[in-house]
Amino acid sequence: MSEPIVVRQQRAARNQAIFREVNERLEELGDSVNGDDYHRFVCECATVECVLPVELTIDEYESVRREGSTFVVAVGHVYPDVERVVLEGNRFTVVEKLAAGAELARAHDPRAGTS
Image 1 (cartoon, rainbow, N blue to C red):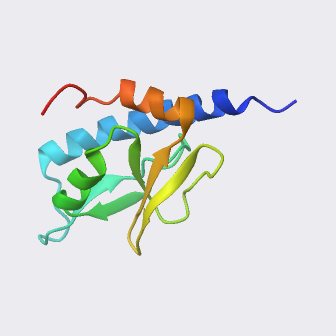
Image 2: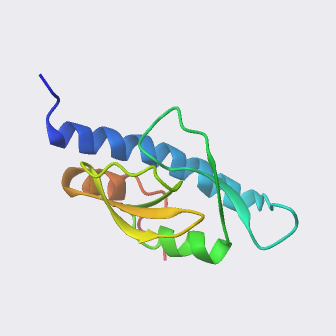
């Protein structure tokens, strides 16, 4: 028997929130790539084993972080049953969690309540 969609949405959001925490620390450290404007972050996809790097500018990352239910993932790392594509580019994709996953993602947003 397959697991209910709400459970999949919540599990995916929890996994992605963990990677978002890692990226928050990477942003603080300013882990620059090749001295240019790109910084290396980790894919925030729903797969716990994924460790693919994703390169974004700080402005791009901040744009993703404006909403607690959005995450930056590597191209092709989208799970349509638990999220929808908000932005697709050649270096990364931005996804938004759906329903119960969106609620959980916002609740685990380290920036929630800050301006």
